[in-house]
Image (cartoon, rainbow, N blue to C red):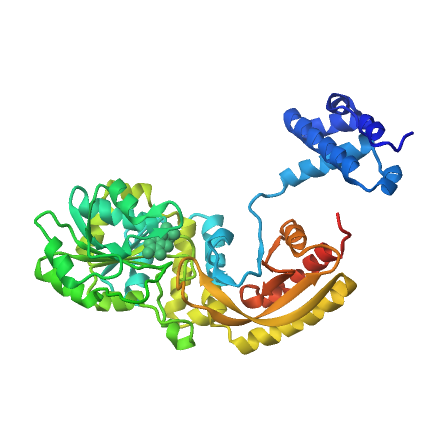
Length: 473
Ligand SMILES: *Cc1c(COP(=O)(O)O)cnc(C)c1O
């Protein structure tokens, strides 16, 4: 009887035979043979699993045979041809989502980046003298004008910035730091390890919850290179705590002829409090308070491309530029173009409107509620009986290890599928075109429009319909 599972399993053709099939040979003409063999084996395995799992009554209608396996293999191979790094719709509400690429660039930055990519540029060419120029020149003036610092440079990311500062100024010398600031920023960036790798000698001062000025004072020796303050970024200590404010640290350090370096992490260049987002120190305030060097990321709350920015005293920045490691950590022209264009938006006073990261953080709860209601209606129409859709109050997060205690009020669209589970829906959406990522909670999938551009909403409805309306698999 053909419908016995064992019988059907035997009908699935062997990989070797399929490779010799004309359609198999056609695939070998387009892809490496080993890849075709792997795809056919995986497709045959998929079919085998299906034979074992389908309900008894569907067995008779199940299609087996070369054509089915080869078509599935061809689909797998075409998937390999698609770009691996692909655009994703971020409906998590986490604005600076490190796993989803941190900051979305402003249009102005995208244009500048494309322009720099398309042709030659004056990257290291001085148009006034016709001689060799410096790649730092494009960013230095604009960074100084925004932050009030004397000098500036950019490197690959903030981890590189901290590493370079330690390597140049503290190799073989001591750097006191509060025990409350020995942070880990996502896996591989841990202050103690970075210091060790740079050749600087870590001197722990104070305790986890309390560090006093006297603790720093007692740690200063002949071998001290500078005093380091690291923004706690992704965690907060609450309760019985004390930290030394930057101006006091600066006063102590300068009275001993030492610089102060501050790793600010996020690098906020506008008052976040002015839009009720959070109260967070700006780079400008650190420079005003006397920090000799400040390091921060380009792609966290600044809203630009991945980069590490260092601003501060000219004499120190010049030493950093001369370090042979600066070459290994330098930024490329695409980053410079995108970062310069982003920074110019700050100078023009257009940052809140034009930079997506800031625009998303500053979106009002009223606007989010209106957008959520509109989307819920559109999804209700598109999904029909396949899901229940409603709007709930909720919170979004700034993300990126910045502002861990901040929760921004938002409205969430909850999609509860009726025929599949929320986890299955989320999985299908991850394989959508483009993939959509939301938050699974209980039986529903939550969508936060804070991180979705209004222009992406129609696309969101389409990928949701494709995923939710299909049959259970
Ligand atoms: C994020 C962060 C870093 C690392 O910055 P990247 O740009 O991710 O390399 C270093 N220090 C602090 C305090 C941070 O918040």
